[in-house]
Image 1 (spheres, rainbow, N blue to C red):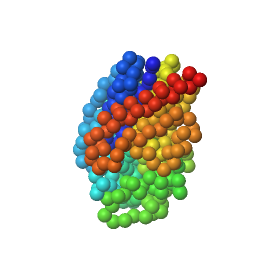
Image 2 (tube, one colour; image 1 turned 120 degrees about the vertical axis):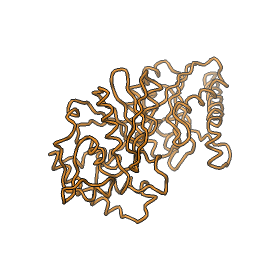
Image 3 (cartoon, rainbow, N blue to C red; image 1 turned 90 degrees about the vertical axis):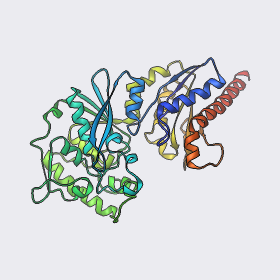
Length: 384
């Protein structure tokens, strides 16, 4: 039997590679002779660099950047053999890098993402694949632009500060010093968000609340949305493009809009990553697929890794079993779209710390139970 194991990471717990290895362990307890292909995946968020390095013979690059709170830190990116740079926003401006008590979009910046892009350009890369999931920011990508040479000025002509606080004071944008190499680079953005920049479905109203849990003084989302719109006026005037209503401009606190202004093309994150690692080729001739992510619920249907794996597997008529650390509201809909099984790995009520510690073995045991049952059911169906 040939089984493809293609999961995402379990956020704040296990990398996609670690999840894949644990599922493989469970499989081999049932079928020691099975051919198991492990293919770690991501959808453009946390773990994108690790997933592509695990699947491709690329090089991990380390670079010092400005972190989301403005402090120096190290961020990894990947250089693939054909010269593509894989940049993960979560490495330089990720929400997981900011303690809950300090999460406030008025002070978090995307500057480090621009520094990652500069590092890739300096390394000679002329094709960039940028995953923008898992961000901590809502600065409209102004920090990113500043790192690339753009000047963002307030009404007095001084450079604005970092974060949404700086964005709120934006009066004009000077692109005369913008890095000229950007015009010769292909930029693909891996993203599963199609929200516009402003309005009820915009960045402020849909995404900012989870990035404001540490705000010392409150800010209304309507106020933040208005500040975002005013800053967008300045950006659109500078670039000569009115794009704020385009799908994806509201991703990553407006970084989606900034990258589109810089000429980027958007693609579904899981589809682009799957293409890069050769998922379709591995599915040919497979008997079963296992996938999963940390939490599966109704949102899984919208561009998440398990859904992307399911769609690809259905093209090859291969059944899919999915595993999650937790199942949330609406997960029942996953059966309606074609998953052969959806399983929570938890076996009993335990503390979060214990669940995280035991996750590798819990995954292995869950894979064992699911595969054993699937084999039994398949045998019964065949014998009829």
